Length: 223
Image 1 (tube, rainbow, N blue to C red):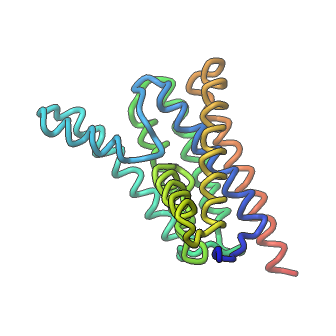
Image 2 (tube, rainbow, N blue to C red; image 1 turned 30 degrees about the vertical axis):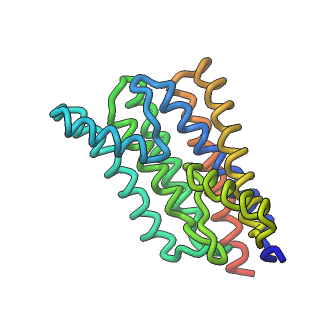
């Protein structure tokens, strides 16, 4: 029998919006002046290794700072949210507002083709990814999809063998992969028109989400 668990509606909506935002940010990174991924660290870690192996100190410093910025963002999320388990009522609004500020701050730097803008965007993505780590024992990520594709493939393989499958996890994988890809589509279309200013869209979205969530949390706390 499949594992029977439920994810609240607000979590489905929030996960979809955040994955869409991450896909949009990552598209801007790939289409920008350095053509680099912002939301996941696998390629960045490889490029750091290549830079060290080929003695390119300037490149090595850039990739090291990109990785460090993501980690600092995740650290900030841990300090703000304090718990890794997804639960309505935790201070996600503060984290989202900070993510919004980081993305807004990145835009003028990227306009000047300064790498510091990429580091700020990476910090924003680390913050977003660190906001929620688990739900009911399930890893929940919105800024990269390698794990989602892996889990989806594993569960499809289990289903082929007639084994028990976590249907909720499969649906989450499809949701995150699909909305992340749609964010990439939107990011490509926006970048063609707005260039680095396309990051103003996810900055506005995260700020709006953070403000609405903070208002909801305040009202429910006083009710």
